Amino acid sequence: MHASPECRVLVAPLNWGLGHATRCMPVIDAFRARGADVMIASDGAPLRFLRQAYPDLRCFELPGYGISYPARGSMAMHMLRSSPGILSAIRAEHHAVRKIAARERVQVIISDNRYGCYVPGIRSILLTHQVHIRIPASLRWAGGIVRRLNRRMRSRFDAVWIPDLPVAPGLSGDLSHPAPAHGLYVGPLSRFSGESPADPCDILAVCSGPEPQRTLLEDLLRDQMRKLKQKSVLVRGVVDGPPEKERDGDLTVYNWLPSGRLEALVRGAGIVVSRPGYSTVMDLARLGKKAVFIPTPGQTEQEYLACQYSDQRMAGFETQDQFNLARALRHAEGHSGFEHPRGDLLEPAVREVLNGLAG
Image (cartoon, rainbow, N blue to C red; front, side):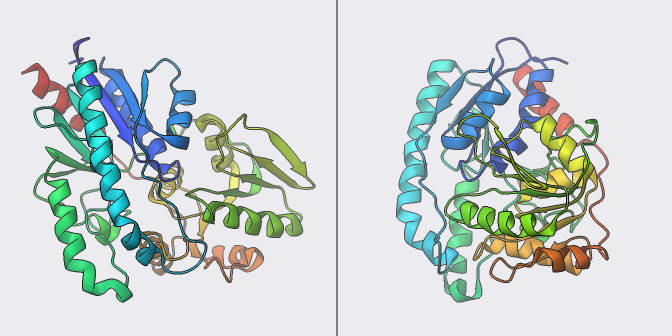
């Protein structure tokens, strides 16, 4: 069954690196394939990225969260201090989404980690793999408060879509298992089709995430990749302006790349070096790649994922302050890499939503 032309879906990814935007692409594509009129709401780099990927879709700008990583010190403590501003931003985006939904006659909202993007009376779905928030040991005293707040914010949505497999550990481990009562596993979501021809290189490094840590990672990778004298590609993850191509000996640098071009490089890479952001993990699993992960310092979710994959001998794990690319490549030879998950759980979830509207 295809959606009627009146079925209007608003997709709203969080502006915290490009990962939330890229994993919304299969959701956008699935709704469009069934005839829905899809619109996009976000801010900053994700909004610019999705405008470039879908130039025919209407886009709306939401208030920004102003999220940043500290250059030094505890990320968790930084986020705790920033929580009043984040909660204020959530309230602001809620008011903005209500206006957009009323004006555009929206019938479905898919919110990727934007907890203010729901409207009572409109089918509102939260897309997140962080069902169970990781709390660092130094802030264990705040764990109960954080979990209760998270449950309360999730309860405002009609459903929670979890981009992972239902059988633990899946790709996200304890972050998304077990599911909440109104949770539904929709399978790993990757923008990659799995069909692009391979573009060979020895090492592909991809930078991502908020500043200043994105730039710190880029500088670290540039310096060490330049010294290795292997055919290498660095994607900076900066979407302001054209992709641009820069040559530096055996190293080729791009600001960013369209999804098809990036997929070709990932397919052809001997190994991928990146943050273990969950969207990146899902992309690598889609193509069954080997990887070395450098978690953002103090980002407990990324540290947990990197440790999990290292313990399972699936991927390498290096800390940023002691990162040594040559050593990491040697160790990676003993890792299995990711396996491509089988089965499509997203399409039935989309069909159920649209059938519910038609009924």
